[in-house]
Image 1 (cartoon, rainbow, N blue to C red):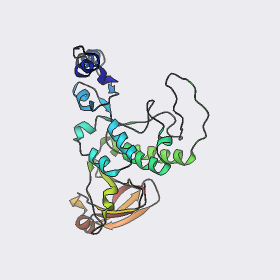
Image 2 (cartoon, one colour):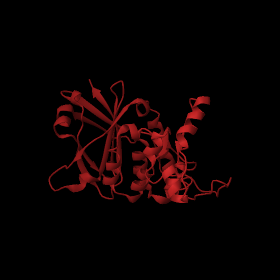
Image 3 (tube, rainbow, N blue to C red):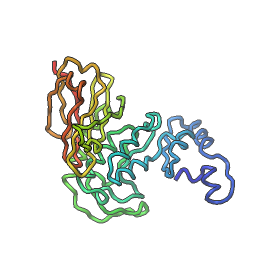
Image 4 (cartoon, rainbow, N blue to C red):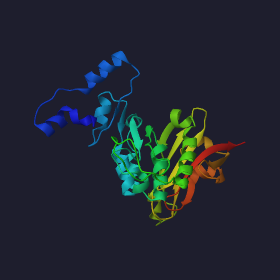
Length: 274
């Protein structure tokens, strides 16, 4: 609860003035251990403030809350923030204070929210029991938990997601939010999509597209890759066996057409077919 000792928060809470604490404390620690990593558990929109005071990372509770609400637009708008800010956010779907993700989200929603959360920039923060679909939240002071059966489907999903995250592009690549537009006139389901791309230093690309809604939706995703022209490209889904070949000129002219079922997603690795 790192924001509680910020002077403005302390005075509002206790009616007493307080000196600034974190900048000097962090400075002193780093004089002894320059590599020490500070992560702030923080709420009430003080994430940027604590980043400015020296924290390496700050909880992204806003993304979690917007994912729980189940609407794509606020989630998509959340990613409009500057990357210098997003790169220092802690992305999570559960922690010791929140209900278990498997108890909060339906299973399909859970997977879609996880793809968005953990394939976006920042620090990926997982909780014990999340990979096996535990539903009972326990006190962090309690060193035991009730027996719960493993959710095999969720476990398999997280194994696939962690395999994807092993790719260096998600640590060293460049991330960008992509624009989604209507697939045809009067089709408003384009607003159900969240899409972003990672570009690696070796020209690798990964495209993440999620239909974060309870209905089947369609859109075109604009791809800002002029080098696609006059070439053919293969889109291999890293989370399934799906694979599609597309002409680069068509992609640049119209974008990538998507027709995706409710709460479903693609994690496309894009390769040039020579």
